[in-house]
Length: 227
Image (cartoon, rainbow, N blue to C red):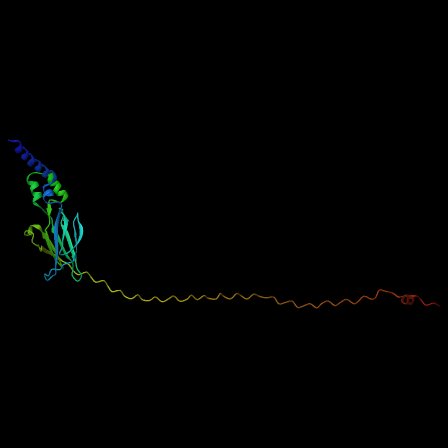
């Protein structure tokens, strides 16, 4: 065999080994998938612009209905909930199915590739166009989708309008507290007052002392009379 032939088969074998080591689905499908979300009224009319939350173990994103968003592939199912004013919620669950890349890895015995495709989620698909209906819960299966046409899924439940918040009532005015009345202190017990002692008369002034002076005439009067 010529050198060119060997090179060709060498490249083929190398590509095969690379495909097994990196995961067939990881190469052919990638780890994301575009999914279109559409919402319908109970009467079947398309309602664009509803707020839709899309989540699985690898995603948690918000998109408006009528648009397409990239979703991380996963072996877990995809949950969707769309809300619109005046409508009950529209809920759905997109079932994860193995894609041909993962099946190919299983058939050729590429266990490493299977593990990679499973770990990255690249080996799984969701329906590519999902239609939800307000007021219903639906299940969507890729195996029931024809090509890339829209799938309305299977009804598995219903939803109800969220209860309107109770109107706020005017708060009852609280009367202002009455001013505190301070009770007067109890009267002090009467204090017995002793009657005033009667005023004592002022002592009489002692009589004036006689004049101690003795005149000569007084002395003569004390002498006996001469015979």
